[in-house]
Length: 411
Image (cartoon, rainbow, N blue to C red; front, side, top):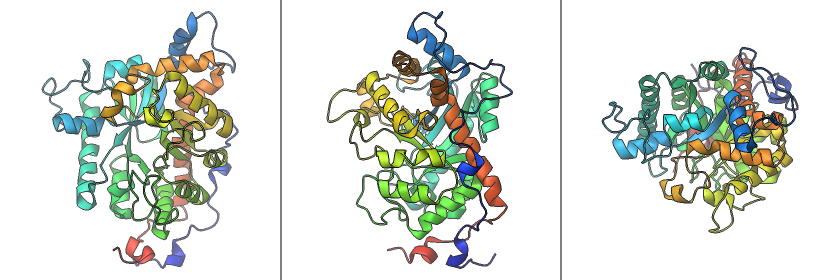
């Protein structure tokens, strides 16, 4: 296929905005094929004794879809991805060295997990691509090894099917844009292998997008960065803005037609961490349909070295619900992404989600808002990306753009 001129790389007119495809003011999507009876909006049943029992009852039908878990990289560091049963680790029987295993996922009411394909930014080029491919391979092997518990989810329907059969929907999400080595071909290859979200940056800038914790270079996205966003829209891959600068967040939200995720963050107005989301970005989520997923990582939750608590997690969730609305908030705990923070976490492991839900019940959150937080909002975002992709693919072919053509030679 001949190269496209830069002028041809802009999206043709007529592709719907996400707000035209999905009503951001509508109630969270319910699954018509679920055996669970529909629940009314309002408080949870009072005949259950205490908020923790009521939290577990809610999670039985509206389990958590968590946006960030670093188990693939953590096990790579510990065991070299050896899945021989009983040889190095066995997630069926509990693993004391990590914060994630199947019994605790079930105890925590987890019904969907974005497995974060973490690659340190010290790895670049072929090394970053290779490390990502190896983790993709590991997650596929993990699902094959534990088929009674895990189910590979490539679509929103897969997520619902997994939940209805008592399995945990396993989605693949890359934790940094450097993993694609500035190549749309590699981006498409990751999608074909099952990756369904990509963080545009990690703790450092990519050559085409600015990180929240690096010196700004692009003031958001470069021309090639814009093309990455458009190609992700065409594929149906969710854009993760968790590590991005506020300029990159605003720039992306101005051009994406698909919902975004912020899979591992918190509210900057509550705690001033550089990677937390400012209110000016939160106010843009209702039009976009995106979801801001709150982390349990202590440094995001409190100022300075103050220990974090479940109440601090709830404070961030309360703030995001107030600013963005109840249909745009979720959970992205970040378990096994930072072993150094394990002993300081307000929630010890993946069994602890009911503690957070119980705190929100005490604060008066309705069934509607809790079900949206745990399951409905993430499912709607995944389905929204699919719907936009169908529309975009009718008008846009796979891009042949390169970073050199759009942004000039790399230094």
